[in-house]
Amino acid sequence: MSDQISDRKNKLDKLRAQGVDPYGWRFTEVSSTADVRAAAETQNLPDGEIQPEGATTYRVAGRLILHRDIGSLIFMTLRDSSGDLQLGVSKKMIAGAVDAEGGAVGWKVAKLLDLGDVIGAEGRLGRTKTGELTLWLTDLRILSKCLRPPPEKFHGLTDVETRYRKRYVDLFANPESRDVFLARAKIVRHMRDVLHERGFIEVDTPVLQPIYGGAAARPFVTQHNTLDMQLYMRISPELYLKRCMVGGIERVYEFARCLRNEGISPRHNPEFTMLELYQSYGDYHDMMDITEELIGGAAEHVIGSTKIKFGEREIDYTRPWPRLKYADLFQQHVGFPMSDIAAAREKARSLGWEEAKWDDAVVVGALFEHHVEDKLVNPTFVCDYPAPLCPLTRRDPNDASIALRFELYVNGMEVGNAYTELNDPAVQRENLERSALRGEGDETMAVMDEDFIEALEYGMPPAGGLGIGIDRVVMLLTGSQSIRDVILFPLQRVINVQARDELGLTDDAKAGPE
Image (cartoon, rainbow, N blue to C red; front, side):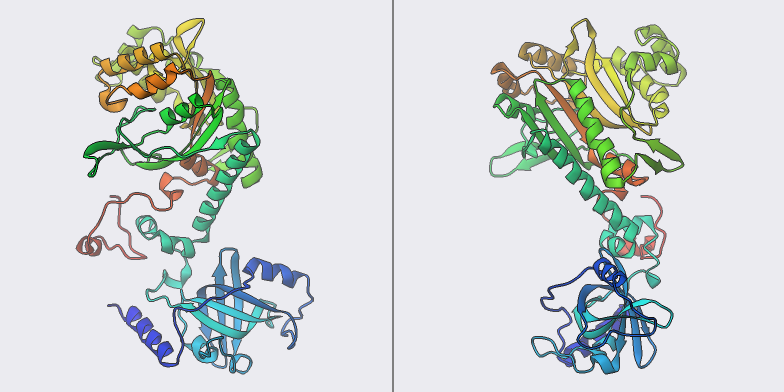
């Protein structure tokens, strides 16, 4: 046990010996520090004075981030979710206070507080001689004793590895981190409001699925003991949402937690949030309009600007966004038509790729990813994909080699994916079978989903469908450089106590990459 933790535990014992419960009681009618500051702006508070007895008192609660004991006075800074506020403790003002249960509070409690303690306080407003707004306390209660020292001087938890592993510390030590997650909540709320206004219904679909599908990805596999059956963690809610349309829910969506047993990178986490929605009697043009309102509207109404910095770039979310053809972008940046498969394979070989076993469309897709995607900085809809890449998508009636699909790119990153949905059960079966024959079993559907095909045979309306990666949207709109900065508790490799010591995983230590 460190000396600091030992000292904090000794203070815990002293509080209990004085009849104080160090893990608090109900503390109600609390104002935020922002509200207290706003109230002070409406009052004429002279420097060096405290409002007299009988003046309005304010109750606040939060975590201590500063504690200065200068003898007869103690100055503290309290932080809550809205900001910071200085508290002043005078032995004369607070000496006689008791709580509702008769437990002693006040000066002796203030002397035993540490950084990180959660407290409740009540007092009258005033200003110090230097003009600092201060809540001078008449009542002070400890609500939760902090036994582990927070990052030194609350300058923030700077080690990235420790920030992810100890997000609970990161959130109170780094207000900018908490602000990201508050922004995330507002972005999701904005999206729900947009969809509600458009008549969409929110539903929940299974996370445990007997047959996975709806995307090209490798699933996590699990076992249900009672039923003695293998199940998959969903990689997409798509096929279940389409079943909802068959059942008559014409506009449907879900904020779905999806899991894919794949790599980890600044843009990928095995567990992520997908907004997926379907609109009966629509198509992918409707999905473009909705996408602009969901993401562009969030930039404007939540972040407060259509021009947002991301690293060294400024991304312009002003609507409408360009709608460009896949084939045109391919020819512009790769240098020949995507229909020239011989040239595409030669190009792939020149890049050192072993393309001989790849399907033609896979070669084209890889070249597009390599040469085109990073050129798409401002929001851009890339439309009309090679059909073999899109087994769930309706074909262009004038050109069966083209699928009516778009992907939205921002800063070279795919953010959204949408189709004019395929609702012909015979064609759907044929496409899925063809995908399996291309040797992509692990990457598409392990087994044909006969129930989904049967659902289509009952008749699914023509529709537009859209999937948006919520984590990536939040990254872009908040300027966060890693997807793990916008996921509260990203997946981390488990490290035992000995390994933690060897890595130096403390609040201020550098651990290095996993």
